[in-house]
Length: 161
Image 1 (cartoon, rainbow, N blue to C red):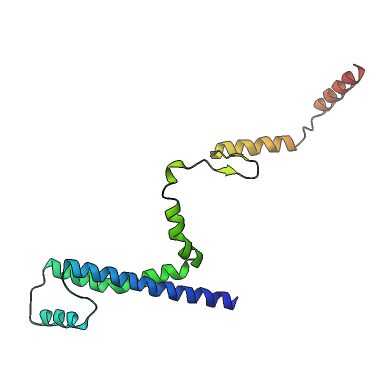
Image 2 (image 1 turned 30 degrees about the vertical axis):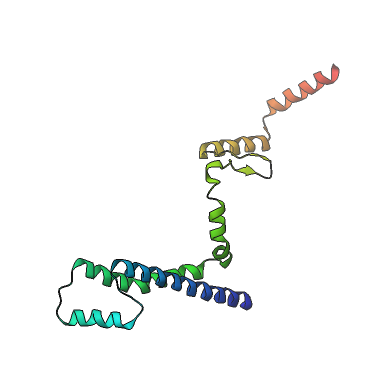
């Protein structure tokens, strides 16, 4: 049990590191494209601090840039939490199953019940209740004396024929 937990933690660390690399690369290219700054170097943050301390007026574009920089850590933390709580087989094979199902969404067949090998229909609650009531009626015998007499008379008449 402990080895399984350790195995899960190791895979989570590997996937968290790759997720962080992906997020940082995406932010790096986005900021390089839109703001023409390199968010990985310390010189950029020094220039932002100097700009702020010199009393510059921040525009909406500057605030959006700072908001994006501050969102990197929460995005990573949420991603790590999701990755840790996922099963690592889904992390490996999830993209493959997603790619495999891209072309088959238009050709989906109805659900097949393997037990009966017949197509399973979606039933409403009323239909399910009615079926259960019919099964209960079949299970419980009718205990009225008149029905016993009629059944006995019918059996006697069938034996005479």
